[in-house]
Amino acid sequence: MKTNIQLLTEPLNVQACVDWVISPGCGGIDVFIGTVRNQTKGRTVVKLDFEAYKPMAISEMNKITEQVFEQFPVEKVLIHHRTGTLQIGDIPVIIAVAAAHRDAAFSACRYIIDTLKQTVPIWKKEYFEDGEVWVGATP
Amino acid sequence: MKTNIQLLTEPLNVQACVDWVISPGCGGIDVFIGTVRNQTKGRTVVKLDFEAYKPMAISEMNKITEQVFEQFPVEKVLIHHRTGTLQIGDIPVIIAVAAAHRDAAFSACRYIIDTLKQTVPIWKKEYFEDGEVWVGATP
Amino acid sequence: MKVTVLAFGIAKDIFGASSVEVEIPGDTTAARLKAVLEQNYPRLSKLASYMLAVNNEYAGDDMHIKTGDEIALIPPVSGG
Amino acid sequence: MKVTVLAFGIAKDIFGASSVEVEIPGDTTAARLKAVLEQNYPRLSKLASYMLAVNNEYAGDDMHIKTGDEIALIPPVSGG
Image 1 (cartoon, rainbow over the protein chains, first blue to last red):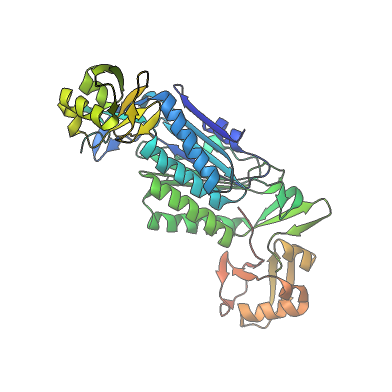
Image 2: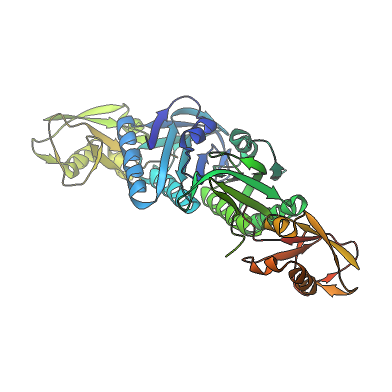
């Protein structure tokens, strides 16, 4: 199996993700790990909620990995996204790509996170000390 | 402390590296993990030896991280390189960069591995079934 | 015909529910359904943008809605 | 004066040792030391490239070697 796409409610496991993509034909792995920041534009963030439209989110992540295998010489691709309530420092997303050579691993990993943020139906609500907002929902 | 540079003989620990760079002000971490491939240009690799000129390797890695902090808005930088004998799938190098935004994390991580491969005095000997070679030593 | 529109993110706040039922003419496009929804829920037109998804695919304005389609309102996504 | 040159990677194979002692004139540049080394160990000139490091810094050809300097021969690096 070359792709591993999951929406999870429990904490994501970096080591398990890397162990999954490591393979004998690969010389380089690039891993992107999103983490919850303690602030947005200077406002203190208390926690985040992530909500997904699950079947469509899985389908859109599958589309991204198909594009990746068409565009980059990579061997294994993993995307794990968490939903539910996350605290500062928690990990909402891990993307790991293994390739024979590092250039493809970096390019594919970057492509995945950039595209995921544009197309995959997952929404983030930021909770501040004095209010809350669905990120990017209004101009 | 913002940088963590180490030459180690024991196996590198991905989880510990990521745990070290995670910080509350950061939203993105990029991690590059080098792994030992089972072949080079079609020839089967049996194992690798890595040798370092230790004080100078540390000094050159420190120079790279100084350049990184000058060039990219990043918060924490880790470079762990292993020496000694490694088997297929083992990890010779882990580079982890945490930044407020992912663009800097990706760019810095890429800069570090590209520059490390050009300047840091570490040498790799590949063992094949029928011989061995110091990589890149001769034209 | 009656269609159910699933809501996510800020759309749940606007609908006041995780889905709404809407009455639309028999042969309706996604654009027409959006117009009906905006009439019923004017705050939708204040979003930065939004899309409809039909059966887990983003729907172009001229896509036709059929009975039994799974329809969802997709406000600007913000995962990752 | 006598200087010790540390060897790494393929240079250890060429020297047959992890360091060698070389006799050089008192006021010598890195370029001059390289010439002496290549005379003693002709295989050095068949490397893709190599540098000298003096006190853990890459040395330009015109760097002067002083007694007590830590000198190392750096064949093409291949870490990572």
